[in-house]
Image (cartoon, rainbow, N blue to C red; front, side, top):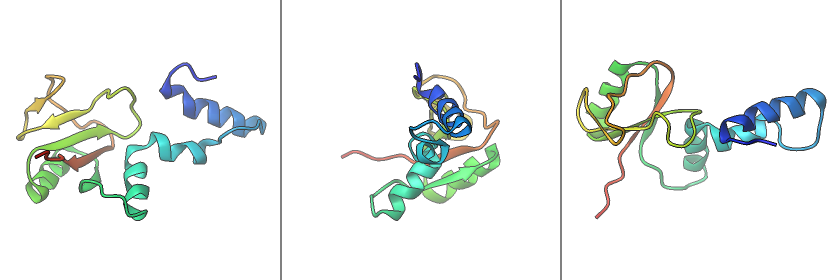
Length: 115
């Protein structure tokens, strides 16, 4: 039993290792990996903001220059909105008040503009 969303993939890996019934890692990844989820939704015809996998801060800036500011930076496997930041301009965030620093693979997407 997973007590937190982060435990789902651990449980899936254990089920797979011991061949226990229930979802295995490949079946849960589309629900946990934000980039994979957005990719599958886009392929299925669901409208999603433009997105990309990036590996460093210059790639975030290049994406934002291409699609426009603000952008949303999301760790691919975090939960409870941990590490999600709205980047309004280079070096500033809105939301958690901390500057987002890309230290691992993250998904970056264009912000949805509500009317």
